[in-house]
Image 1 (tube, helix red, strand yellow):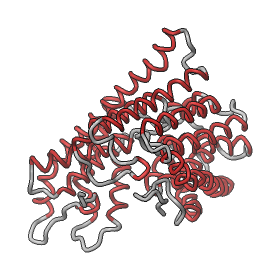
Image 2 (cartoon, helix red, strand yellow):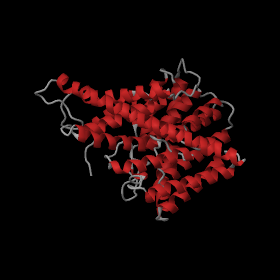
Image 3 (cartoon, one colour):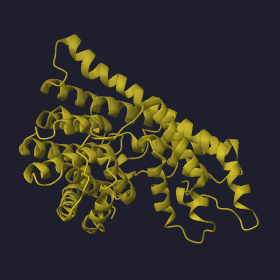
Image 4 (cartoon, one colour):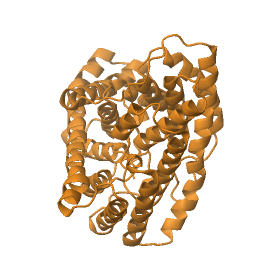
Length: 430
């Protein structure tokens, strides 16, 4: 197994000036950044077109409602069958068990990448409550590591891992800021290194910037939920943020505590052609219970959710939050290939709107951003990414200070608790 990690990127040696070391890194970083973004955009376009066929063209041709109860059950079960076939028959079996992977794992073999991307595309198009981040990062890391080692054998493998991770995170969020935060968080744990933090971040930031600009120029991504702007925060807003965030974190932890149990139940079926179709059937039933907004990765659904601000009843919002959390738990447990950040954002948004519906005095931006922060901290344990995503959703600079303070009680709730990730034995990581 490869032991290189993004946190061990090469640093300038004492006999070399930073300029002479960093300048040659620019071109490889740009190439990796653009390439990672193009792969992400390619998979996104293919999955969206396939989604259109499965959920609009095909049911229209059959005279069936695209989001009827019957069609949701059939499509999610069929998606389980399709992904099960990939896991069973395609070389590499679509990579390691998704329940045991996070955003930054060791490079997988390049022969695994086609099956991984195929399984991810089917998962995204079929309506499963998972995002593209984990498989896309894994694929880009594998390809960058393999091609980079062939093109420049003298460059440490950790550099290619770092560049690909940063580039893909930049592409996913349309900004290099999130990538810088993730990489800097990893560097905090590094010991014995030399050189400044910005020397270490230089090449990953170039890759992240290239990936982000490629995505922005070609796809114009947006996380803005069009929430009312918070212009003059007061003590009440601070109290609300510091209450909603830990409450949402507790809600998110429900999935973390249930993760090993649900994973173990599905594993008893033993074969992917039993496990994944069963998971798809459960997801279809959950879709019927929660409605169409609780399907798919959740990014577009979040915007539809927020567009109905004030029009959702507290019962509807509670149902969607609970169903989406259950759908994320099932999808992550039964072997569907995907990430947890995007569905977790939907869960947080629904929870925040629920809090605001129950206590109308809470500003919507405060409720939603704080809840997203809490759920992301619980389900990802990525502090900087959680804070960044929560702040971006509100599109309000004044929210940042509130969120920084709200993250403190929320972190006390989640630290040391089970994560939404398992080790090789199936036990929760903490």
